[in-house]
Length: 162
Image (cartoon, rainbow, N blue to C red; front, side, top):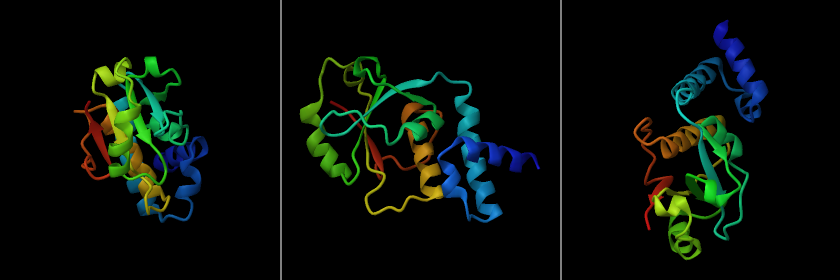
C-alpha cells in the first residue's frame, strides 16, 4: 500500500504521470524502485546548477523536470552553471561533437572545469516511461559522477573535454 501511495504522489507531481499510465503493476514497481534509488542518493547531495543549451547556445527547458529529478537545478545564468548539457532534439553525438567546440566560451566555469556533457537521448527513440527513467538515471550519473553508474556513457551521452 505504501508503494502505491508513493507512486500516486510521484505521478501527481511529475511529467511521468502520462508515461506510467497503462503499465502493468510489476513494471511500475520496477521503474519506481529505480527512481527511488536516485531520489534516495540525491537527497544527501547538493543540487547541481545545470545549464541546458542547444548548439546555438540558446537555453533549453525540455529536460528541466528530468534534471530536477536527477539532483540538478536548471540554471539560466551560464556563469553560475556547474555543468552544461548540450542537447538538441534530432542531433546525434557526432553532430554535437562537430558543432559544440565552436560555440564554447573558455571563460565559462563549466568549460574551465571540463564539465560539458553532450546528450543524444531521442534520435529514433519513443518517449516511454522506461526511457524517461533511464534519462533521469543518466543525468544523475552526469551530475554526480562516482555516485551513479548506469552504463550509458559513450552510447547516449559523453563528457566533452576542451
